[in-house]
Image 1 (cartoon, one colour):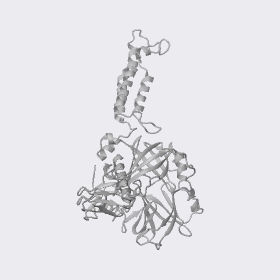
Image 2 (image 1 turned 90 degrees about the vertical axis):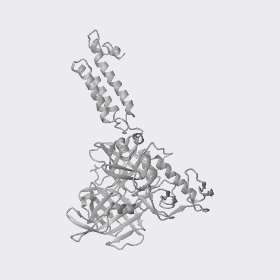
Image 3 (image 1 turned 135 degrees about the vertical axis):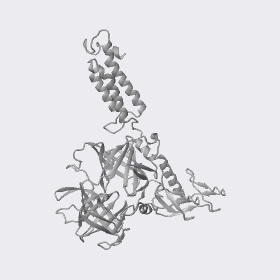
Image 4 (image 1 turned 60 degrees about the vertical axis):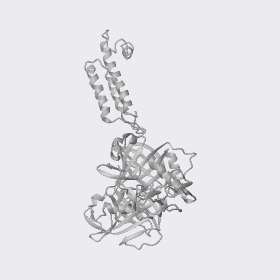
Length: 555
């Protein structure tokens, strides 16, 4: 399924609008004059492995009004802060009673906070570690969720702010979480400033005067950086690069042999890398699909290599350099975007597909930092192999993260830890057939290596067939109920997934039908053939299975 490209720029040759499905595309072709545009900024010369940064995708604007709890408010100012890993917005809020607060917007999380008195004891900023440092405040235990020291050399302001925006302001901020409670300590001031609030859902704020979907697409999709058309210097005709030919370019109009030198070779190689990534992805950047009745666009894709937990931890914190670390697996993550509904993650691994959302409300944690009542599944790490498209933070090749998974109903809770940030997400399995339908793919394209092609309906049909065929023998007391129950359990397990790693026991529908049919026939024969033996003895008579017809019946 395709739709209009989310990202766009202008052709430098004719001025016409040019769409881009991926924010990391190196080359674009103008649909009007056929010129090839070459983009030379925004992560293009990174050898084709880092992401672009999605900016200005907020539905909020100065003048937006809403209600937090029972208090009406208006947004009267905006501070947008850029740093090495991304950008976030702080909206200055004026309540109808004259008090003020802040609505912070970072990625897919929104947080409302207001000034609060200082806690009695507070860790020193240099000693705070995301995911590890805790402190008690108002009878709650808070965990450090985000710790950054940022020089705001590119901060931008709109509207009214309660302070003067100084150039090269250094921000030293630590955010803390306890379930839905959000606590911020700003060490930039002396004494530090403190803010208390909660994560919010925009729908609950009853917002008015927000930006439209078209306005968001126009600002978020505007590609940054310089661009130039690639034309033949001899005849002026458009020249297009051919993948795999990095040294020489042939003009299709006049036949001139154009040598590629210097930075152009790097751009051609990066372009080839991006094209290869697009072809390898199950869901190419720019494709669209309908999930939950909403049409999402794939704006980013990550290829991650999996590492053993201790290896990833040592590499993240530079504790020691493991000798020749080798990945033990890999998976892909896709960032989906809807201008109104925001972000959704799709995860593609050997065990199948999952949807994932960042949790606004953290789970209740025990004293070890684990979610209460949830069984631990595993710890592991990842390293970004490459990132294509745009994300709400700057993803770089080589970035490490540490994960801990916990079972939660039919899904799993996952905590993701980097050196500066900790976040919780909830993932739930989604059938590959639904992915295929949503994005207009052949099912074989969406099916993962370890995913079973069986479905619950087929599994229960096979179990029902086993029961119908063998129930008369069991009622007549001629059948073996233990063998029958073991066969039913085997049918159930073979059609499901491993509880250890989520991989399927049998990889295809055909294989499951063949093995399941054999199990049913074997069990039926075992239950009925002894009953028709001319001796009239039971299968248990005569001292065990060997004398009771098991071997003869099996033959």
